[in-house]
Image 1 (tube, rainbow, N blue to C red):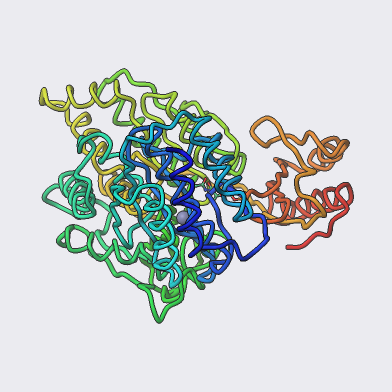
Image 2 (cartoon, rainbow, N blue to C red):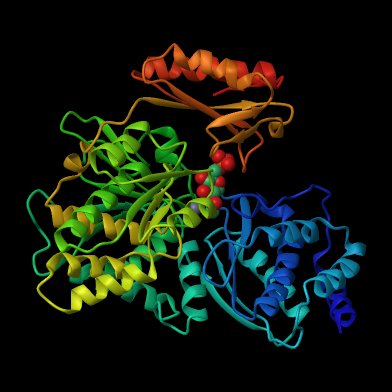
Length: 539
Ligand code: 16G
Ligand code: ZN
């Protein structure tokens, strides 16, 4: 049976031969490179997804996207049955299969089926989604060809253009029989918008909160989903949607990554507007807020500020509702030192630090009853344990506990399956409304420490290895000692370096009491990395 399937796959693979030698690895965000190198990878990912579905006897997700990368790139990642990132052992298997020469495909598939004890009689079920890139439809077809090569009769739910978080949501809802929500895009929009409208209640204006918002759709799928959402919100929130797609170019001078990295406003958001703007990235799983103050100064509120807003509000609601649930936060080393201080010293909320990458944060957040996790780049969500869901719902339904009822509303606004810009945006708006806060009041919760991000090109970025959630260097030998000496020269100095998981560079982060000092610290550390890894520094 295994060899029969392998023969079918080899036959179908003739339409998706491997025409490029380049090794393509399954990185932190799946396979990602120039779109024209990906046809054979997509076909093989289709094969792997169908086999994985048979093995776990559940629906698997496949998302075709390169997130915030430029239009000419593309990528693909697999989503496991509970909505989480693909199991690491299968990342290895997927990478192996994606990079095999065509004539080695057959034996490798047979060995995978046999070693993993895959029950071939189980019908494969795969949920597929794609972002708005021009290359996505053809690459999606390659994935579908791969799934069908394993089993012509596979169950394939092709949802077309959807955001990455919607794909995660669909996988969860499909596998839990609709408990988390209705497994359709309309079901997703209805769930979130209904919960938001319930939280806002009759009066959408409160204190200094104005129910008007600019959404920067990054010319991607976020704009498509926002349009559906705007309709469903029915004026509870007045949205001015900009960067809605062609002729605007995906992620070009707009989107969450652009705003975060360039520290400036996206295209079509003018500096004198004085309003709140929420920037989404190309697949709508990252969110960054921004505004201009009266003096025309740009201000950015990144993942850390969003996390602290959630943490503060949930902390508050837990106290008011007198529910005994453990609230915690998860950050990475990139989190601004001020945000960590605010959480631990002002809010008394414990903070776990993990390596970069959603899967690490998500996993660590499961240790709490209510776990708020965010990367500074704007990717994050809140997880509620089973115990938390039950406790909150029970308290809310017994009546008279307004804080518990508000928490129950957040259970439905938040997409806990993965970081979701649209859901986070509704969460932020509901909190600002609840507090009667302007964006400025949110922004002044704490003051970010000045910081600088640099990258260094080196001969081999994997020379750099780290420990302690990327906060200390193990190799090259002597680098950490050098960094310790440099950091000690700066007031409030902190710096760490790590090899990027998505680019061929070593990243340097530096933080200090003034911007000048952060810049200086970053430069000195980058020079040390360059020297010890024989590379060249570049901004
Ligand atoms: C990927 C990760 C993101 C991380 C980024 C770091 C996922 C789904 N995405 O985009 O969490 O922040 O990589 O990139 O895990 P870097 O390794 O190049 O710094
Ligand atoms: Zn993204």
